[in-house]
Every structure is written in structure tokens, then in C-alpha cells.
Length: 380
Ligand code: SF4
Image (spheres, rainbow, N blue to C red):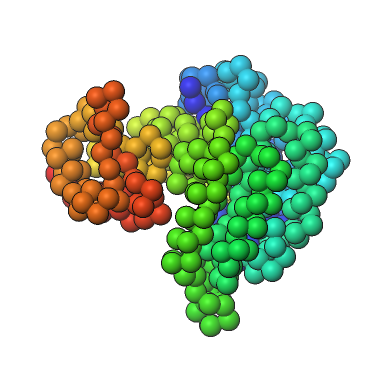
């Protein structure tokens, strides 16, 4: 089983914290959709397995018209072997989701919405320069929940000056809509973003790790109490509603990434498309592929297995590391993990005689830092 990711590189305005690839000019939207369709055709033989998930990510896929979304889904069905009942997700922003659009989307094959709410508070949305306001966030969820049962929303925590009470209120508002999935990320300061510049100039205070950790603890505790499974560091889902697209990615399944800046994985190698809309369209128009391939070394694959394993509820199976990489990799992993096991930031569980390295509740927030300490820098 495999997945197809389609990158829609347009946004109405640039959020201050974002370093994804997108353009705020819609001039090339039609040409882009044509190029995306063409890339699907050019790469139709790259995946010979049934497609289980189709994911429109961005950027802001909800800037596409329903006709454009239908055209791309039809192209996938036409050129690939699509499994029965695939998960088809559309990332959407609240300002695009008026009642008319939601009803029209419900009539397409899209069966999952991932909505970029980020916060229900006006001041947070302004600070982040989101295109929607708090009322639009509420309105779109009120309507979307009437037409879609599989909805995820994004929420951002660790925003400067966000009090724990304010964060609890955001979570409570999200829960009041009875949605089955929440993705939540700490506000991070990426280089060259507007946020980084504002902090540099002293216009906005820097983010505070201690505050983010406090918010993270509130988040995990509240959502777990409300029957969400914390199945990946930033993802919480009710049983049966984990994102199939993201899970496949974490479990190392193949996926085809279509569109500028999209990444692909064929089981061994990773490749990525050029992140420039005009060049992408031009190269595709010439029937060429705008991609570069990276051959993953054994060490790269080990590092990825450790990072993704530790971030998920499934952990890092020591047996699988032995099978895939050999005894010396497990020995290295355990040597590096020792101090974190002693501090109870990591734990080795032993369910059905399968030993698995996992982050503890105390260690979860620090997962990325811990994982990088378990990485191999030079070949062993
Ligand atoms: S809408 Fe999403 S992709 Fe676009 S600028 Fe904002 S965070 Fe980035």
C-alpha cells in the first residue's frame, strides 16, 4: 500500500512563523493544476501498489476550486490503482470554508478535512498573521462537523504570553466540537521568517521553551482524559481516526509527492521536487521531472527509524533494528540511550517479548533532542 501527496503551493497571506513553500500570488494557479495533473501522469509507473491515501497539503489546498480538486482526484484514479475507500484528506483554512464550499466538498471524494484553526483567540491569530479570524474558526467548525465526520484541526501552543488558562480554553473549545483528531505543534522560530525578524528586532519576545512544555503537558493530559490516543508527538486521535497518511509515512511506506517542494519515498530513496512554482511548471511542461534524488545510507535509515519510532506510540523495536541494521546498531542505540533510561525519559517496554524503546511521559516533550543524541553521525 502506498500514498500520494499533492502539494498546493499557494496561500492568501504569509503566516509569520511559516517556512513552507508557497506563493501568495494566485496568478499561476490554473497552470499549476495542469502541471500537477501532468506530473501524476509522468510518474504513474513509479508506484505499483494500491493507493490507500491521497493527501492535499500545502500551502493552502482549500484555495483550489472544487472542480480543480475533482480534476486531480480523477487523475489519480485514472492513472493509479486506488484501493477501496482510500483516505482522501484536504488541508483547509477556515476563511475558505464557508457553508457553500463545505457542502460542495462533501460531494467530492474528499472524506477528511484537516483545518488550520491554530487558535480560537483573535490576538493569537493576529500575532501569527493568519488569514482567518476567531469567528471564522468557530463558524467553519460548526458547519464542517455537520458534513464531515473525519475532521482534524491544527492548534499551536507556546505562543508568547499565552497563559495556561487561555491555552486550556483553546483546547476546551476544540473539544466542544467533538472532532476525532487534533494535531498540535509548538510555535517554533524558523530562520528567515517574519517571526524570526520581529524577535531579532525586539518587536516580539522570543518563544519560551518552559511555557511550551507547560502547554504540552496540559494538552497531553486533557486530550488523553478525553479519549484521544497520543499516537505521535504532535498528533492525537480517537480510535479509528489516526491519520492513515501520516501513519504510513512514519511506518516507512512508499509515497509519491507531487508538486513543487513535495518529497517522495520509494522504499529506499527519497527524492524531492524543486521549490519554485515557475520553474516547476516550466520543467513539467517540457515533460521532464523537476526532482533530485537522495540515496539514503544505512546510517540515514537508522537515524530515521530512531526519530520516527521515538516520536510515535509504536516506539523503536530493538528486534527490528537488529534485523534491519545488525547487532552493532542496537548496541550503539542502547549505549546512547543509557543516560535517558536512567533519567526515566526513555523506557524499554517488553510486550509479548518484543523489546521496544519508547519515550516516557516525562521524556515526550524532549523527544526530538533525545532522538538526535541517539543518531549515528559517522558510520559504525
Ligand atoms: S496557511 Fe499554512 S502554509 Fe500558508 S503561510 Fe500559513 S502556515 Fe504557511
